[in-house]
Amino acid sequence: MTAPHVPAPSELTTLRQRYRLERERRVRPDGAAQYHDAEAEFGYYAADPYTAEPTERGPLHDTVGVTVIGGGFGGILAGARLRQQGVERVRIVEKGGDFGGTWYWNRYPGVHCDVESHVYLPMLDETGYVPEWKYAPGDEIRRHAVRIANTFGLYADALFSTGVTALTWDEASEMWLVATDRGDAFRTAYVVNATGTLTDPKLPGIPGIEDFKGHTFHTSRWDYAYTGGSPEGGMTGLADKRVGVVGTGATGVQAIPMLAEDAAHLYVFQRTPSTVDRRDNRRTTAGDVGADHKGWARERRENFLRIVSGEAVEEDLVADRWTASAGLLEKLLPSFRRGGDPKAFEAAYEVADAAKMNELRARVEQTVTDPGTGEKLKPWYRYACKRPTFSDLYYPAFNRDNVTLVDTADTHGIERVTAHGVTTGGTTYELDCLVFATGFNVGTSGILSGRLPVHGRGGVQLLDRWARLGRRTLHGFTSNGFPNLIQMGPLQNASSVNFTHVLDEQAVHAAALVAAAEAEGALIEPSPEAEDAWIAALAEDAPDHEWFHAECTPGYYNREGRGRPNGPNSYPHGAVAFHRLLRNWRDTSMHEALRPRTAAPDPSGTH
Image 1: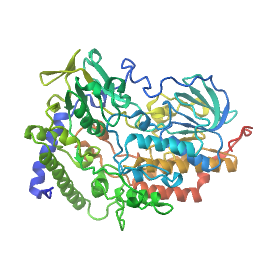
Image 2: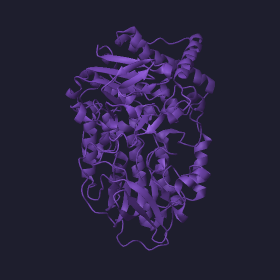
Image 3: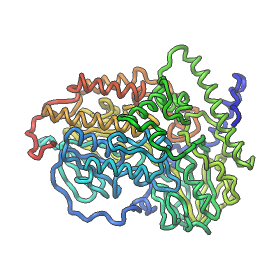
């Protein structure tokens, strides 16, 4: 590939104008309201296509030490770290039929992780596993989730095909009452909420979507009974089918090349093209990744986290497109602290950003043979406006005679779905099958969505309290008035492109809180003053990224073009510094989150 053209300062004005024009072509007045939850009439959402029938069992009315809500990597890691702290009865409640979370549900063709598997897959040191691929396919990831669960005995008390419907604090016993959609009503000393950020599929609210007479499904509920084949391809059921795909983000970029191979004709409906960088996936050996000594995986993932958090390292162990472009993640994560003149930094940052985007647009030109199609696939926005994607198969798919790219930017998306196809730009494309690669309601699952009500002291509802006072936590984990409730996730915490690393650090912290409370016979509940101090710490150095996201093309990063306001939402100094802060706090100030119990301990015990 030729070296990217680096724009001179005079050229940046023209580039900014182009970015602004392309943004305005795509902004919609309905913002995030353009998407709907996957409603019941799309029956594939309610059903679990991977577990034929839930295991028959009666309702449970027992008592357990810790209940973990969610069986994805967050819940599995919480269970494993609790086991390491000596907790015996850990009950994981999971809506799916097995462990895996997003990797249980997402089995679409071509599904892989876009973060290197040797840093993405947690507990490799503890399980002795070395991934087979640099970027693992979904099945390898799901098998590793099961491996961790087996290693730490998490199946013993797990409840699958079960959703938690309510959490209620019982003051007399100082325990949580857990209700589920299968009639369970049991008690638990602690609750760890690990429902994840990518669990609730969303669908575009396109007029007429309910009228389509062909076959349809969301990528997170892939219907192999209709398509045939597997995540590796071979979808013989599509050999005579006209297939449409809505969505060209991280999922679409992986699924579209597979559909192009197997469908009679594929129509790709695109509003905004993704950036698609090289992947260079390959099989790996233990020697390739230095898996020849104890702690190799921890060293590798810490190295990756430091690089993508803007810290200097002596050697880049992963050496992929994430680490090569790490400096451009400054606006994606509030994790880079820069000294010197802010204006000089922003000027240099914009030049580097433009050089990278020129490189990515040049990649389109060098790969896609039809100039008109290539122009539509070029991304015109700043690098951190949308999640980067990586594929060596995506652009070549558009060189096939059976693939048509339908750009919908000028109509701000698809205009209408009819009984037999999709209408946009005055043309109707007749389809037999319509696939929605439209992603998830990011960060709004479980408790934060309001579908899992939590009533704490005095019957106060958590979201009602936050509506009055603002979201209030200590370190993102615990809240006053809601004892022994520990939340995992990105809220008032620190995040990274390698979210499983963050989840593991959170799991270690959650398990340490439980162990400390048990050792002292205490409840986990921070004071209002501790919450105040944490909110102030988040706000004090919060980076000014609001202007950047307001200028971005619409997507879930900026609430579909409405912007992402500055505020005390994330730890401003990055994940590396945050993990260091948590370790120091556990060593010196754990008592800040503990208060004496008044009820007698439950005889069932936690340990």
